[in-house]
Image 1 (cartoon, rainbow, N blue to C red):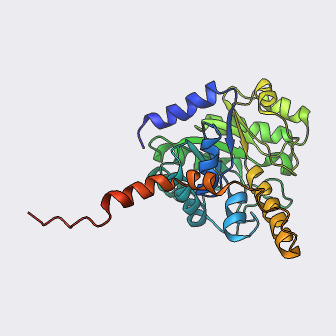
Image 2 (image 1 turned 120 degrees about the horizontal axis):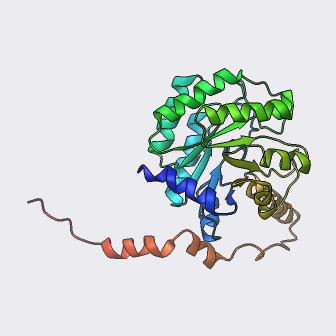
Length: 292
């Protein structure tokens, strides 16, 4: 990944007002995000593990599983991508390895969190934190190892130790070298406003439907001071309900939903059938070239 990639991600974070990243959990969702006109996307553990393995985000799987989704997404789109790197999957050396893996996959940004392993979704109960010094060491390791990766530091302290501690940790993580701060699971608009004005660095918010944080419009969050906003499970929840309804319709034999989805022709355009057919036409039946 070229050195200017981090600068490019930062430029979008600073200019997009805010930089909105819908969550992708596979290549098809990534392609749809790109076709919808968004300028970036997010690959998170909650949606990826749920869609791919039907398991909750409670530390059951790690780098191998999430990076496999990132690989599929990268193959489907050229959009800038942020990936949830959880706690870095260990200590400083594991964080360095995680950074290397994602840079080789063409990922532009990650976020690291200060939860203790096994981590869990930030909106679930039972989270435990590492000491801020341990998180600072991970941030320094990530910054030292990266070529061009944009690094967001996430703190889950709001739910465990309160908002004041979350803000203190945010300042420390910026000082350790993080490019942006993400305070997980504020519980009111007032808390969102306080976090949005607390940091001199770039600020990220997460809109997780059904979670602890109020869902606001991107422009409202930007007015509060947020530069990056992720909607990590919006597509996952929509497709799960749509598939459930379609299966109920099929099981009942009503078939009332037949024809209500994307058309067959639109789907073939989405997956670039014409491109692959053109390759087939070009080379089908071609005689092998004799070696010289």
